[in-house]
Amino acid sequence: MKKSLIAFACALFMGQAMVAQSSQEVTFVEDPSQGYLFNQFKDNWFITAEGGANIFFSPNDSYRDWKDRWSPNAALYVGKWFSPIIGLRAGASWMKIKGMSDVKGIGDLYDEPMVDGKYKQKFVEIGPVFDAMVNLTNWWCGYNPGRVYNLTVYGGAGAYWTLARQYNADNESTRYKDAKDRILAVRAGIINSFRVSKHFQVSLDIRFTALDNHRDEKGGDWNKTSYDLSANLGVTYLFNKTDWNAPIVPICPEPENCDALRARLQAADARIADLEAQLQACLDRPTEVVEVAAPAPLATIYFPINVSKLTKEDVRVVNACAEVMKSTPDTKYVVTGWADNYTGNDKINVNLRKNRAASVEKQLLKAGVAASQFNTTINNGNLCDMGEKFVALDRATTIQVAE
Image (cartoon, rainbow, N blue to C red; front, top):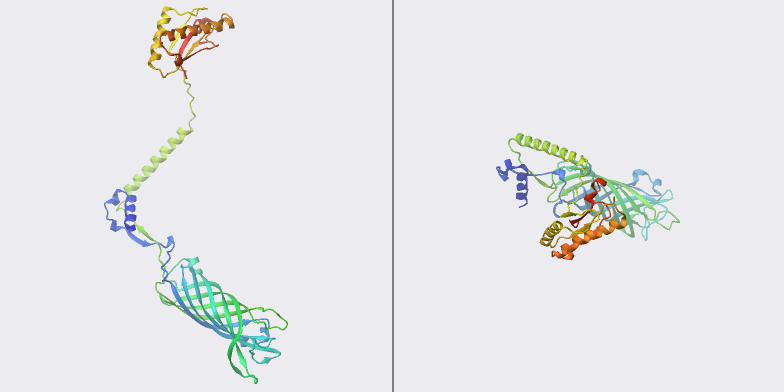
């Protein structure tokens, strides 16, 4: 289902030229650039067996010949890689330790015979260990399932039971016995692994361990940290699936000849660029301010100087306005009285304005216009204000739609 949807989307993207082609021509491949998917839990498990030698460093070890401080060690691990980079392992570690001490024995057990005023020590440490691993090669260089060499670093911790040699009164070694002494350890190392086949690897594990060592100096109440350096050769077997899957992506076939499509696309891009330039030029053009003239009055009734009464002709005009007003009852109107400011005085002109507006108001009411449909007011300015030569145009009453 998922592949069919991807194929369909691919065909749509390629245009009509792709519709005619079969969806089976779409191929699916792994793309490592998209990262890697987690495998199933049963995959990428491994078991490692290793053995080698170690040298022990404690406060009194300088008194013992360094050639005599080398001892064998071994370990067995079971682990799992959770990605090409990160893995965990757990197992059992066994190591023999040789050193020197001011203190004779651990618990009821004796160490080796005294040499030059110091007691030789030989312990066996055995216990569980846990490590977290990081494959630096896959991290830095990218995952490659066929790579022969891989470098891995790890760090972890462990807990050990101590076994010590028991000697009789004649300083003859008898056997190893539990010394009833537990120590903790932290460790870190590098693993140089070499691919032999898909399921087998050989490795060189170089490890440094810090241990909460047995007290080996007189007068000390606390154990001192000691150190161990070891090198181990190992063999690893990998179970089930050993490699990693990359995300699967579709590869859509191109039309046999894309030149025409490319030309159309380039032409469309050029057209889009031209339209964008025109749009920007339009947006950058200064805005023109257009003055909108006030709407003309429904009617203007003019009066002679000092006159506020309507003539018969004026009454016919007002009655005609009344019919218009009644035909649009939802429209509000304003009746305004005017007088010129070039003749008379303010008191006379105010009375003229009021009387002229009142004459028109009275006639509108008489003609049947509802009083609620208009307001009556005056304006103290000049209606036309074109100078004394045209004062006759300022002596009027206007009927206008309310704003």
